[in-house]
Image 1 (spheres, rainbow, N blue to C red):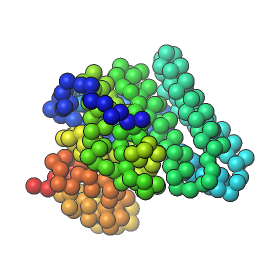
Image 2: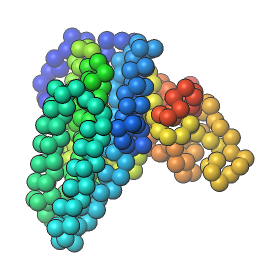
Image 3: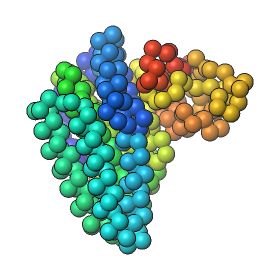
Image 4: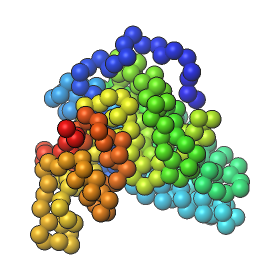
Length: 319
């Protein structure tokens, strides 16, 4: 629920000249090992480059597909099939949690939070009728909501103050369910109210990608590439210096290197050229990722979670 009250913080800017938004995709947070690597990257970034950091996470890889299947089963009135899918989702998430070797106090807190979300998920499934895009969006939001809490718990386990935040509380969108568009002006107000006080307190917000909410608080999703889009939206409205998209490839190429042996790696490109590549179907970069940053003085980087020392691709703003 978004607050209409006056923001309760002393400054309208983050407590550091540098604010980075880092998004970690499904493969970067897809299992315990990947989350350990992601946590290490975040820890090193905070140490090497003193800055405010906002983290955006996707669902564990494949979870959103399972939630889509649940929606289809609801549509076919085959709800009994969803029990097995829920059991599989529980197993997958608890397997990740148990393999992170969290301290008992953090594990108990996380267990409670995840359990409450699964109760909420079951209730959502049982009450979803009629089935349409508007009713599907709340269902699809659970993958990111589970994982934001898991990643935040891992960060706390290694000594980083972190807190999971649902983006639906501050990213306001229209009502194009399944492919919503943000209201940037209102989102800036709400995001600053939600995030700046935490940054001033030394907390790393771990934000759910992919989701938002309408003005009257109906859950929405942002469509394909929605978590990358979330990172760019926040980079814009929070006036970040940089947005980093952590994925499982080294960066952008002139063509798909898997099918074109003449493809060359692109260390630096302009926003315009990056947008052109995205429109041509570059799988590393979604078209919507660039759009919020066009004309903004924000650097966008594409980095490989599993090859973090590689410089990746830098997308520079228009001058």
